[in-house]
Length: 281
Ligand code: ADP
Image (tube, rainbow, N blue to C red; front, side, top):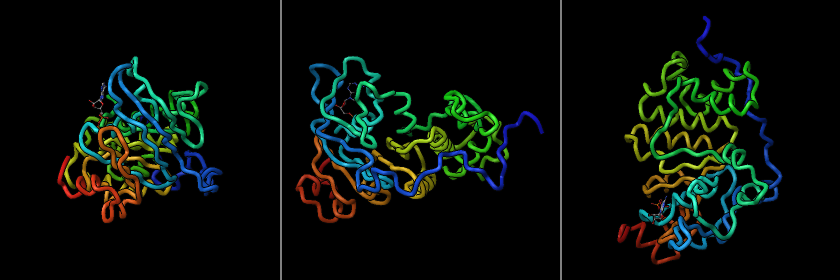
């Protein structure tokens, strides 16, 4: 068969980078991401959407950001890979370090940062391309992967995103033909193809039905073996199910950051307790 991009089903050779068991920072017990007294606003005189927030994000674990609508969850998440830079006249103070390097440093290459820190959005947003073309797109334009290796890379990413078995026979079909849940897993595969260390997920299940949501939650559990994950969710049950640590924000400020189990069972702040017991927000 010619023209149909298909990855081999068996004996995949990994085209993703070899990951050492413990990167240096991780070995030293350092967080993968450090948010240090970080504030962000969308215009010079606007109120701070994120206001003096600090917490560490552990490597190869899931950190959830929760809080009422408008409290700054997405803004904080999008600051980690500088997606908010796209808003002209926005400003920040403080620092965010990814693997010990400041994301706002002058020398930071934003394209490289966004490859290292991938993003999955609320609504699945596949490109108007084939299933194969969506996953191959990033590595193909970045030029880092030889063309002949792309089929293996695509297959591996689709496997990691738990989508391979459903699409292996129709890789050349348009991504738009997939279900919402499949499209979201395709977007995860597409992010993985850029060889990220970190995956940021902004309410990744909010447009999905409960079955598709469960599949994404299982996938998040699998992915944290290899990736650092930060997830924004308005769904507290989801935060409790999938995350290891949780940050609770209110009006741009961090109210409490703790192990998820502790935060949901023995919060130290009255405001956290009010929120998780449904007394506000
Ligand atoms: P959450 O994710 O917790 O719902 P957001 O981070 O989206 O909160 O929003 C935090 C604050 O920033 C809100 O007051 C919101 O109106 C404001 N905001 C968000 N995005 C923009 C934007 N692009 N321009 C101006 N203000 C924004």
